[in-house]
Length: 160
Image (cartoon, rainbow, N blue to C red; front, side):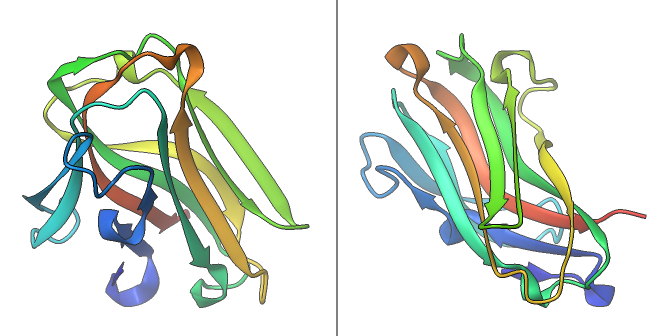
């Protein structure tokens, strides 16, 4: 986990995510990349091929500044060889008994390729002692084999 001074954002890296089949070299490869927010080398998860995509994490929102609006986004790179993204993926987050939000994203339309992109999940206002937030990215519709994205992590950024 990275935390910028001044607490304007918190980032969970790919190693902080639970990725279905993430440790199976047939489906995912762990590569070192320069993190776009810190320029440090970090591990990222490169999708080789899956038909069932599921990457998620839990995050304790109590470390965030109460009363502040935050945007949640997955940091991903779409590669030139990306394919199998005919159906949108589902992005979402939830804090039990407090908030739940979700949206669809068409990965096939993401531009530019081979650059880090922040794909928005949603926004929320941090509440004191709100608890564990689960954030997810999933796609299984049509059971089509997908490939060609790199997951860098999830970012929680304060909005002004």
